[in-house]
Length: 391
Image (tube, rainbow, N blue to C red; front, side):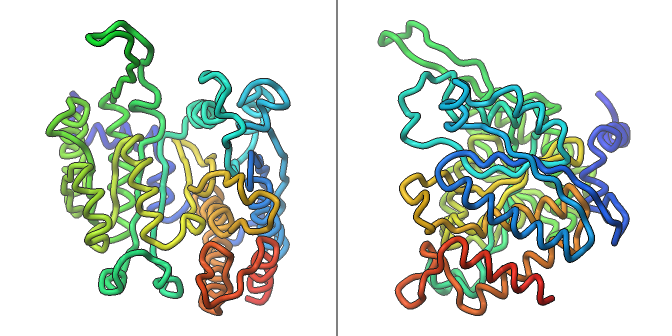
């Protein structure tokens, strides 16, 4: 086994991107950049919200002297309809040839009956794996202007909620061995949860490095009282924590973590967990903030190329009605500017514009409540753009 310092040196060489970002960036401030961005608009409201993000990015490019080239590719249900498969090779090639990817949403009831091997979600899992995107960063915070939208009691909300969920993205039960077999009670299906030390180590480093730029606290969520994979997860987290002595590490079983998120969410800073637990907990965290339509995410690997998407689904029931909330996708574009392109000032301009829009009382239908007039997707995008132009 490598000694801790050797582990760190090896990790820095293989996964140095995260270190550069957390310790000050990867590029030159104020540098004019030409970037190629792949767009996977997907299904349902995906095309509407991605178009809003593109409009915002075009304004940012003009304001700060950059050039963004956008190229659209098919994935998900629309790709099944057009090509018979959820992830055409053209899409894979286009994403790998781009500097980063913006994804809308994939799937919907229309494709529930297709064979499991070509479901829309299969395309999403495959593109993450093909691009080597093993880390999903999902921030969840309650905006002061939207605190009434949270289902939590006011005294809990007033303590503040600002959590970063670090989810392992290319391992675990979603990628494990699966199949059918004859069992004790007849035919049964199985899915295997498996993690290697390497997979746990790299996500641990990302979590601890993220915490170093926040409040230096990591909660590792597992089910080590039952699962062997979780016992390895916990053991590895404790070993890697020794390389970050300033960061406080605590462990929490996933069932308790789910309860604590609604009981006392302010206790959390960075949560790091497996693929399936992260999938569930990040959706729960989104709901305590008031709307799943507000939360962005970034998926990253060992290079600066990432995939950026809102955490909500395709919402086919409101597709084409103008009711879609584009803010999560717009904030995902801001994360792309920060994490992939090192455009901190540009990312902050988008985030500040969103804050101002909310503080000034503008709302989409999902966050309007009973007292505010709901704006449509285009209208709220227009206002965000006007604020960015005015800075």
